[in-house]
Length: 121
Image (cartoon, rainbow, N blue to C red; front, side, top):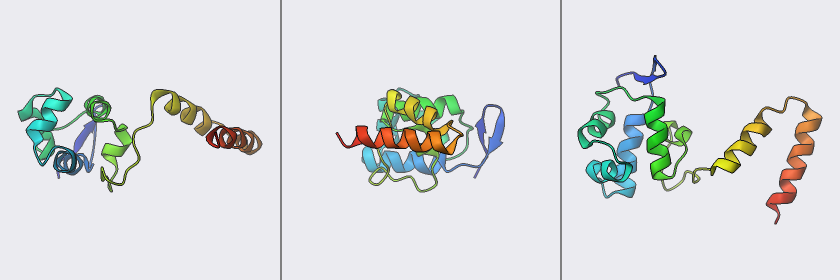
């Protein structure tokens, strides 16, 4: 598989496979229908899907947002629209980012306890 581009650096990613799977599972196998849904040129999306063209993280983010997924989900090696959780909304993503940056274990435990109280509602 051709290396994919992420902010100027190249890496190997399952993005091509996952875009094809997304088309197969949510658009009856039609890459063209997926292209229309995400407002991207069909030939460009076809090149992303067959791995013949590099794709940026910005474009992955656009595709993810347009299809209701988070970028990490489209990059996940075991992506499956039937099993992956839906993308988090922007508010939830901000809370998750804040939680992830808590270094002190005691503070992290307190934050987790607060979050559990909210999730019980």
